[in-house]
Length: 173
Image 1 (tube, one colour):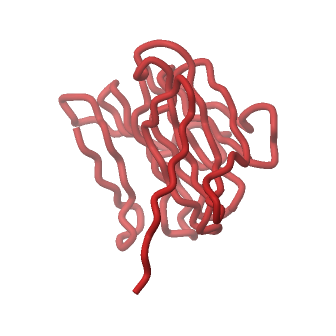
Image 2: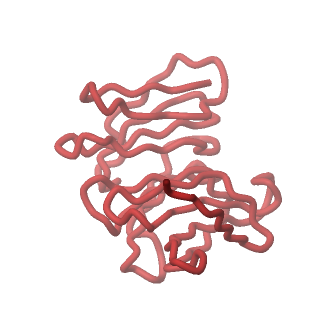
C-alpha cells in the first residue's frame, strides 16, 4: 500500500489557474498564475519540481497580463505554451531565462485554454478564448495560426485534444 503525501507551493500575490505535469519528467509541473484573480495585473509562469521535502522553483517568468492556462510540448521536454489575458499565446523554453521564444497575438480577448496534441507525430496546439473562437496553431507559433473555428455562443473555457483520434479536439463554452 502506498501512502500519498500532500505538498503545497504558495506563490505570493498570485492565484493559480492551471497546472500540468510534464510528459517527460514525472516530478516536474508547470503552473499558470495571475494577480488579482486575473482581473488586473501581471501573470507568472512557474516550472516546479517535486522533491522529497517539498516543491522547488526550477524557473519562473513574469508576463504583463494574467496567465490562465499552460501545456507542455509532447515533442520537447523543455518547451511549453501559455495563454494570456492579453489574447496572446507564448512559447516558453526552460533553458531560456529571459523571455518567451515567440509570442502570437491572434485572439482579440483572453486566452483561457491551451492544449498540445498528445499525438507526437501531429504536434499541434489548440487555444480557446473569451472571443468565442478556437484556434489551431503550428507549435512553433512562427506560421501564426493554421485555422480559426467559430460556433460557440459564449466564452471558451476549455480545449483538449483527443488522445485517440488525430486532428480531433473538444472545446467547452
